[in-house]
Length: 333
Ligand code: FUB
Image 1: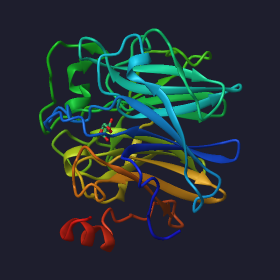
Image 2 (image 1 turned 180 degrees about the vertical axis):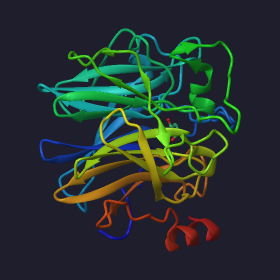
Image 3 (image 1 turned 90 degrees about the vertical axis):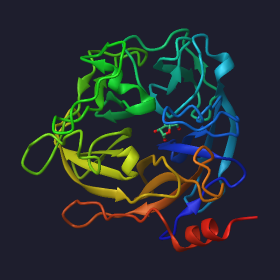
Image 4 (image 1 turned 30 degrees about the horizontal axis):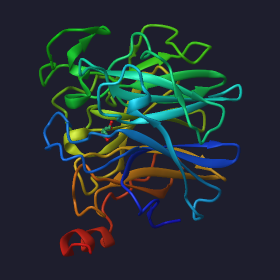
């Protein structure tokens, strides 16, 4: 598969987290819809209220919609905005980790449980203790599970230092180390953190932390972790510069050395992805706003093959394809 494929033209789905469970590909996206909330820098227009799960036997095959797997109304601590989620499998159970604002409009991370990868998922009564901000990615490494999370601007990460809420936002100066994504080991029962979240440091080729003003490389949101040839690849969105970048480390906690761009800007403001191996090939799942004619809050999920160079670097993928340009410039029926 060299050309990207839209996975579900029937509806708007974003932030696809893909995993292989029982030999099948499962995809857990956010579910965009036209809620009528005006667009702002806080992301209020991403006013999602439920999740669906999808599966595929083959990368070119039929994409099965398993229907609604969790909705805001079923979550006891819910305020609004179900943002990016991810699913992990342990001992016959599936755990859906999700970003949601509580009744005080503060993002927390919740967890819901199912016996099947296609759900439905039953939410826990409270968010995970000590969780905050958005975009959980759960990564299994030799039977241990780690969560990566965080996002600035609407994702509220700038309201925290040392895992404490400051009650106001506080960005580092442009020449200071950037705000870090967080990494935390998950407890055996999969419902709690086993430790305090730690900073995940991204450094340049000289070992210097990437700075807050380095907007082409600093972390914004959309953490993802995968392992390739024994190395740990942390990938993320640069937000307002619209790139998916990656950094490589020797263990799940890092530090991670910045390497380059996985995906150049797509049509739309946000960019968000997952990377997974399936049947011996690697794939990038992502989204863009081509089918909605560029409406930021109505995104469509896609997949394309991802390739490595011999030295382990990722071959950069273009976020805009010829067909995308034609549809956006020429409009779409
Ligand atoms: O889908 C809502 C938010 O947009 C996600 O949580 C961010 O990563 C961005 O894709």
